[in-house]
Length: 298
Image 1 (tube, helix red, strand yellow):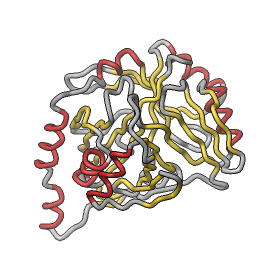
Image 2 (cartoon, helix red, strand yellow):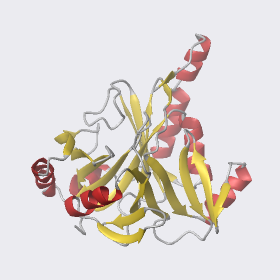
Image 3 (spheres, helix red, strand yellow):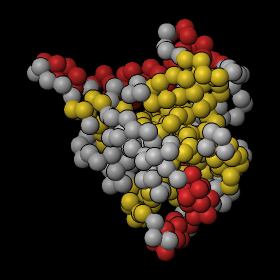
């Protein structure tokens, strides 16, 4: 399973401008690409919405060797309700800590050289106040689970991850496909996992030829398949094939064919400008204010 890669986590965002400030100016990430869509995604990448939406990929470097964030913005939806499913993304960057302090972005010290902050919308981010590593600063994504043993079996026996660390006291298991990649941490929340309306999705790639076998395995094991193998088009870019799964707690998991995804995910030098132009052209806030109405809260 060494050929499988951790790619990104999908966040639904209600305020694109504030969100862009957080990722660009606080964390110090770059806009890797930005795409606008007139209708909802066949694999519900933007959630259960069928209207106009946008996707912005942000990270510390190219998606080939960095774990990044996919920011999905649904025009007309201003906020989403958080659950206890996404428990945080941890990254190592003293620069991000100093940026947050300089910009007055709220930080709470929660451990030795470890700070908790929030992205707009309330998503928790943990910043390790140490020099940014030469590789990817993003270390792990933490998801809440209701039965640690059951979830560990799913992610290891069925998806092929290897366990790297267990902490009985904290009720966590750290795992991944390779030591050099962003890790997945499962944390037992001691009850039901609530996904709210902000629920995200974690994405991985695998060789294209593994996708039908992965789908067949999930059918055989009576596991949930949210979207059977499907092709997704991005105007002017590579068409990718994906299978969307759900783990025992309903966490959405996307597996995409690696070969086509490497073409789709090439850094677009115009990404930053495309995002800025889209935000400048988005008059939805003004329209709602003028009509004395509020954007929908999902």
